[in-house]
Length: 287
Image (cartoon, rainbow, N blue to C red; front, side, top):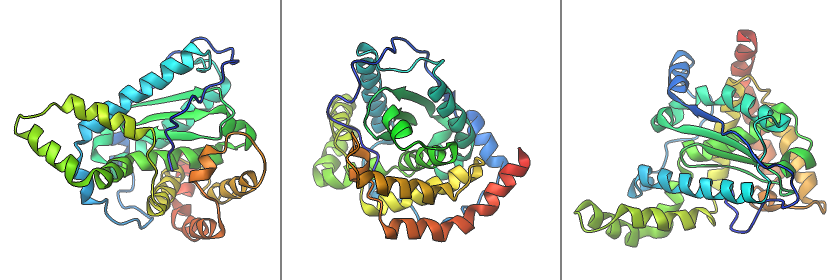
């Protein structure tokens, strides 16, 4: 799952004091996606209609607020990587190659202001909030010694959670009738969407995705990364590394506790690598 940790996750000892934000409006992403293959190569089915119980705009606004609060906390603890940091530049380069292929998975993605930041922390973690707000912790890059291809698989996976609106669906399921009633009142002019946004923000901090969501994100992320020119076989080596890390005593295993790496997960990825191999090869030829 894409974990939004409710506890402090930054390293107070980090020397990073300032940075410039990386923002990429996805208008160009939509245009690039339209120029590429439109049909998905992986089979993940349709997104759940339950997500419509939660207004997408409200959830994205709440996520953006939570993201900014997290960045402010990191900045205060001197743990937010500056624009010049090599690892952050590496993440930016990967994001630029994946974002142009997000449009077919979610029509709203064309209007998202994608943002990528790096936080100094030993935690093995990464996430993408609704609306395209991405964060990596140095622990996941350093402790697992990820290649660019493997990093792209993680980024694609987390982006897929946002594109497939898993958070929106999970919150709708947990809120059920109460949220529907509140939404009905607001649509009739009897409530305040701002109050809903505040409530959703707290849920984003503790949200857990289902195994079905994880499988969905694995496959969509695999295709995003392949279309971006990253070797899909890296998805297998990534989760093999995850499996070894989960069996060790490494620090900050929050990501691994919600992303179990087992034979079934690796087998599913192995079965889907051939489906996207041609996309990867085409991207390589295109340079």
